[in-house]
Amino acid sequence: MVFTTSQLNAILGLLTLGGQGILIILFIGLLFKQKYIKTVAKHALPLAFLVALTSTVFSLAYSGLIGLEPCKLCWWQRIFM
Image 1 (cartoon, helix red, strand yellow):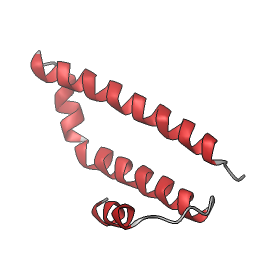
Image 2 (cartoon, helix red, strand yellow; image 1 turned 90 degrees about the vertical axis):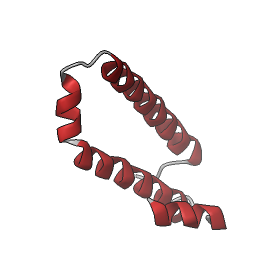
Image 3 (tube, one colour; image 1 turned 45 degrees about the vertical axis):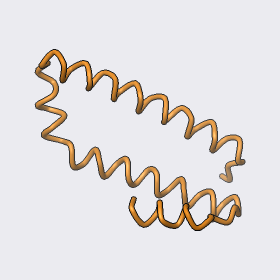
Image 4 (cartoon, one colour; image 1 turned 45 degrees about the horizontal axis):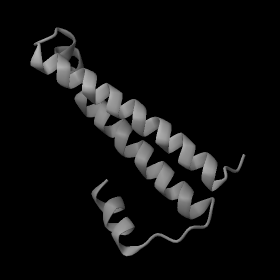
């Protein structure tokens, strides 16, 4: 199944909104010292890996599936992911 650019943009937009919502919940949990913060901290490395994997896959989808050539700054972003 090949995605169009607008479909990939919509998926990435939803993932970004979901991630921001999760960050707000975590920030509020830190402020009020909620118990779920310890669970999140215990699984921080796999969560960080999931974020890096998702961003790398979508970056490669833009260049490989859609054919958009990445700019120099995009290459630096991929290196640091």
